Image (cartoon, rainbow, N blue to C red):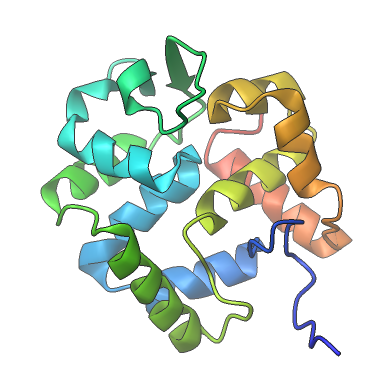
Length: 191
């Protein structure tokens, strides 16, 4: 029988964090790597897109506090969007982005997976945080907080069917949902 430590796992097996776990996990990340995880979590971008953003910081429009991803930035081969805009970024995002671009380049996916597993163990988080966790976490937080599904799909580069199927089985407690709404409000994502 499977040992279920925390039921916050999507249908494809991706761990989704609640706010308490997110904060615990941040404390386990070395300072020089933290901005990579924060940018990944706040934007909900795919990890390969985070790597490409690091190489193309001009995609971040500081005056609009938005990231505009051209077609070549997006991972999906079947991608139909000419560009994708990631908005609703926290007012402190320019500071986080500056740390991101001044820090080390996001490592290759294999190294990142090892880092995430090591930090999960250090933070006592099971199942472990994986490369899809930041993206699935922010998307589920936004969806469960009542943010318009179209905004989430557009921001994430999903079609509606793809996005919904990942989160149908997730159920946050009332306390977790309260913390999620508070965090999204602090980040400027939820008004």
